[in-house]
Image (cartoon, rainbow, N blue to C red; front, side, top):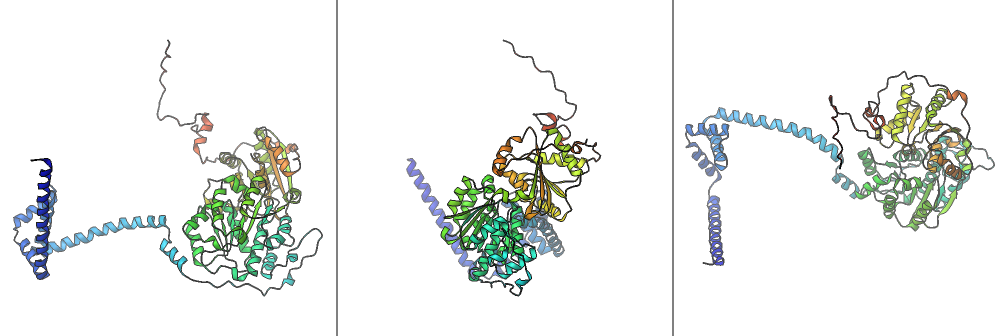
Length: 592
């Protein structure tokens, strides 16, 4: 017999077996249809009752020992349970109680796992988001306060200064400006308000603390009040968008928007990463939003999840564009620009501390025919800041800083260092001398950063040591002193550092330590400022000897203090061997 014929015979036999099984199953189903279910159950019970007590005991013994396996063991367990239920009702109740007690232990484990799953997924499900966005609900436009009399706000006319009265602003905006105590416009406000309120695209060069946030917020608010029909009435479709590089700056912009728009019925939300995802999501879903201040990353997350629709944006503001370029946010900004209406259907405003070639190239890509507005440094924050440069050695920095802080001439103070590790070291050394300082860096948790900033604003904390990444988001009034413990690596960072003081017309002081390591950036800073930095020797009392440390302060990173870190043991770092380990003798070198 050949192989092909052998396999053919096997296939035919298998087909006949399958046909027989199908016919038997069909006949059994038809026979069961005619019978009552009660009779079927009674027949099963009678079969089980025929088993004797010896067989039941053997089944119990087999179940307890677990020697048997497979289908036989499973059938014996079922028969034993059914026979026990028919013969002894007390045993049946005991079994039911055991079964009732067993499931009670399982839900406890499930209840422990549920909160973790809810915390990971969030309190708002995707279905709720989709329902809120798909519902065709149109909300009413918020009411605007018109009862305030503008005659209460009187500001005298002064040469070379513009008042907010000169721009024909609506009463709700003027009322908010009156409450904030503003009287005259800053140079960037005076130069840009006419152009932005007329709908032009503007690329503005202004340093930090010159009032550019109020400049673009006032123009956005006036546009909303004049074009009432253009205000959003659907969820997730804002009319204005402000992009900023840091979370702190986003929060500050949203606070300023609430302060200036409290009589306009402005509905704003801050969207940023790191915390409060559900809270931000609820504010976006519950009611329509007029203005969204966001960081690029979290905004893209909301757009990918179809929470926000940017097709109705009429005004987009890109704040601190030079910082976004340095931090690598430009690809994300490009993706956001693609989600907006076309260039000729929206207004684009760009503000930066420096308008170099790269920033202007981006401005020309994102807006047609931008109007360039530049505020010279001599008309900006430099007039309100006294800049002092102390040429001292690196070993003398802490001595001069300690004596400056102990002189108690200054109130709120920010000290800038270039690296997080250096910030930790300086906070530790100050704490040993009894000077309490908080640290802000990119690695600090967002909740802790918000707490430190609130304490800094309220006066609970008067000294903060920060890096450039965290310092960009510090917008606190009445900062009297900024100390550049290390000169920054980039000249632009110097502008942003000293811009923390001397804000809104108040006077401030910036002290910089020029040692042998970081002084190479001074020429670049001078060319950026347009004037030389005047170096002078510190007063003799600033070189007074620092007393011995009195406070026992543990280091947050013990690896730098017990000889196990890279700072303590040299370049190798590593950790000490455990126990009384002694290195053995080295083998002799091989000689040819």
